[in-house]
Structures are given as C-alpha cells and as structure tokens.
Image 1 (spheres, one colour):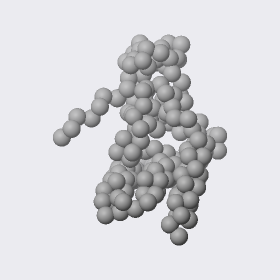
Image 2: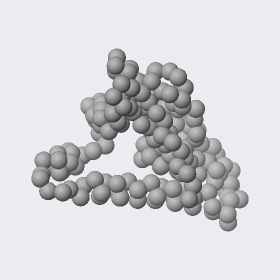
Image 3: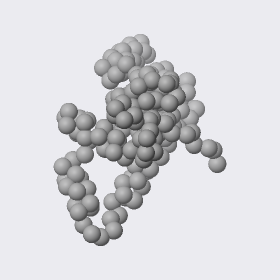
Image 4: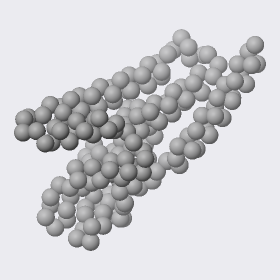
Length: 186
C-alpha cells in the first residue's frame, strides 16, 4: 500500500495569522482552500496549545463560500445536518457523507482512467481535445475533489490556477478547434 503524503501543516499564531510551514510564509483561508482544491490535505494547529483546529477552519471556508452565493449544500441537506447535531442519537450522517464522497472520488478517478485508456479511439482526430474538455468538466463539477487521481495538475504550494474564467476560455478554444477538425473531415 502506498504511503499517503503528509498533510500540509499550517500553524495558527496568537495573532490568528496562519503560517505555512513548508513555504515559510503566511497564508489566508483562500490559500488553504486552494491547497485543498488542488488535492492537498491540510492540518491546522494552534502554535501555543497544539490543538487541532482543522475542522474549525474547514467549516469556516465552507461557510464563507456559502455566504458568497457559491452554494453547494441544498437547504434541506443543511437542515438534516443541523438535526443530526441536535439529536441525542448516534448519527449515521458522518459515515454516510464519508462513503458518498469516497464513491464520488472513486467514480471520478475511474471515468478519467477510462478516458485515458481508450486505445482503439486513440487515433481519432480531436480525441485529446475531448479528453481535455471532459477533465475540465469533471473538475468544474466536483470542484477538483479528486486531487491528482482526477487529473489535476500538481502545483507548488501557495500557488493557484488562473481561475475558471480561463478554463472556460480554454474549453471554448478547444471546442472551436474540434469543430474545425470535424468540418474538415466532412
């Protein structure tokens, strides 16, 4: 079994500033969100007490995105989550969510693997463009949850991809190239 990479250690100072121990610089919640989108696990600890603050900061990142209108969680799901916290019974919600996300990541990885292993179609004109579009679509639909298994590029910590606007422009360009190739085949 392959070793999983160690999580990126972020230390929170008394001033509440967050410090990336790999790059020796301060980071923001948006930077941490970018690391996670790129498939990197993070661990955030309080420098003085050593308390693990990861859950608290991940929830803050989700709350920030939800408050900006980048809604992923439907209201009924949020209500069910609140109910699961309020009931005195042991909840199956955490196990269900973990299993659901594991299945999503595994399915995404299989789709990408199948796209890359279509050897009979490998000589088809425009296949590379279609694969790039499929990868961009899967990344956009899942927010890059699959990490490297889903075809994400490995990036130096602290850097972020240009953004979805450029991804959309690249897809449009690739689609235009594919249309050109198809029209030439006719």
